[in-house]
Length: 190
Image (cartoon, rainbow, N blue to C red; front, side, top):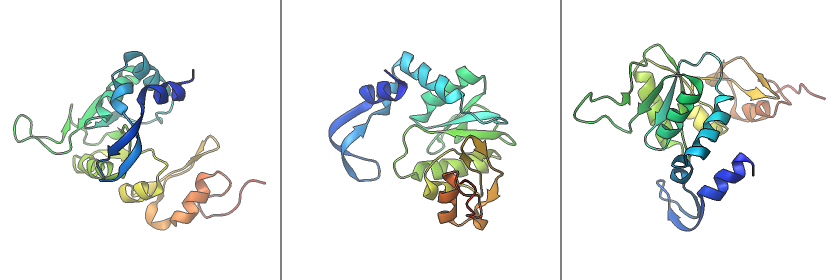
């Protein structure tokens, strides 16, 4: 059974589920079921490790589901893991980002399941406020535009240069992501 099938078999539930966004779903993906399975989590981390871009200095796991993924990915890659709380505690270090200083580091955000993207937007801003340069990998253009000041596209196995999002029309970025068009929307494959 391939990895995606294994994750689905362990984590897919049917019923009535209220999501954090307030929406109600008939199906639910319970991330804690794959995150609590050591063999499956190790295999997920091994697969993710092959996709970590060069130049990343650390991994940021978002509370709570991103923490086990970031920890397992850290064990696979040797990169340090940092843990981003939804809000700072009123005691202890009183920090939003735990695990060390992220100032000046290039941080890859590791999130488990994204429904509305609201928390990833907030946590990314917290990391930036702590001085980190944040790298987010997502296929959700609305999420990327809310988070990123620069955007690069991986298409057909090639990573483009990063361009300011303010200069990129969202429709053209969608075409760019197919690999058939460049960042200007010009057809490049025949």
